[in-house]
Length: 463
Image 1 (cartoon, helix red, strand yellow):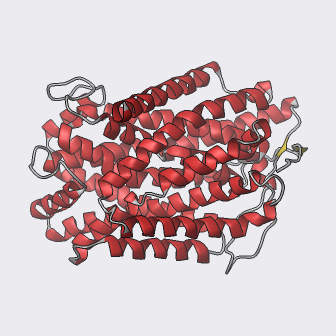
Image 2 (image 1 turned 135 degrees about the vertical axis):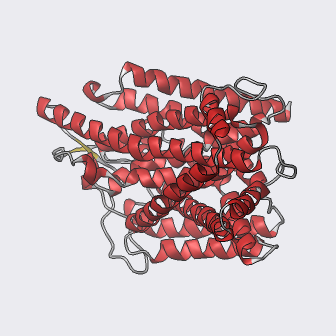
Image 3 (image 1 turned 180 degrees about the vertical axis):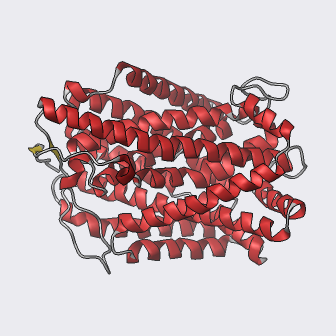
């Protein structure tokens, strides 16, 4: 479509850090159900805590990536997809493919269903997974204001789940387990440094990609900045329920502010505050959660037979917790994991539906307008749910396999969007609000890192 030039609007007064809390809960929750709950604990259970440095590196990379995505949305009040479409007309087709294909694999909800089945005594859980997919579709379709629905659910899950995991870890972890965790943060393992012999590079890359949100989901952070009305996002509308919500005007194209001395100073306050918010909620809480869940996995099931394949190690963890504390605590742990994974899948569908609907409009060559985004959102939402149901019915039901397939594809998507985000900010923003040399360096390093591992996995699998 033909994009209108950026209009000029006043830059709103910065909000306090307290009032900024919100978007980072969503982007954190997008990672909780994949890397934090499944992949890093799986690697720790099988190879020890010497591998946990990769999780801290991955979430650190994603902190800087997310902030560059927020930088553009704060300054221009539009998503990063619109910004890139201004530069490269056909780029939206890439985002359609690199969002739908990796995220159509229902590994997260299949894991949630497996753990729910363990609680209620159901062995064939693919029908449970299908029911949960439909439930997610109904929740997202019926919430009056979509952002509030997603944020409230994710905030609640995190506020209950993280403290509970912390307490269980404190009770069960022995001093030698904590020592192994501390050494693992700098890559010192049991008989190896950084990477153990025999570890699957694909699994390690998958875990790196999911130390945080992963794939194009990071780019959805620009939507949440808009929906909360931060910076120039104040002038954008919100997606409301097609059934219960009052329609709001939604403009895909944003606006910028005059680069006066006062506005630059005001933007820098915005920038400082959103950095603090994202560091506390996403980086600090996310790192703590990964470390504690991996510590718990290591303390309970490391070295035990039968944990090499699948996600059964989580069920074994719950059994151990029940034996060491009380049976009800083991069941409670499984329920926390189940609900966390459910919340992650819900957040994934929300983010991918936003991405897909906007990029459908951007790739329509002017045939669709911004007002189409609400019905398109729900169309692609149910299309993704349908794809997940078909995959489950075709017999692809092993959760870990599905998660790793999606994560490797998403790591490749991250390699691409990291470079594109940095290029966009360096060429579209006023010089005074562009990334610093340090942040440029981190983004370049992330670009090389994800690119190198992605190319290695492709070469290893196909050549």
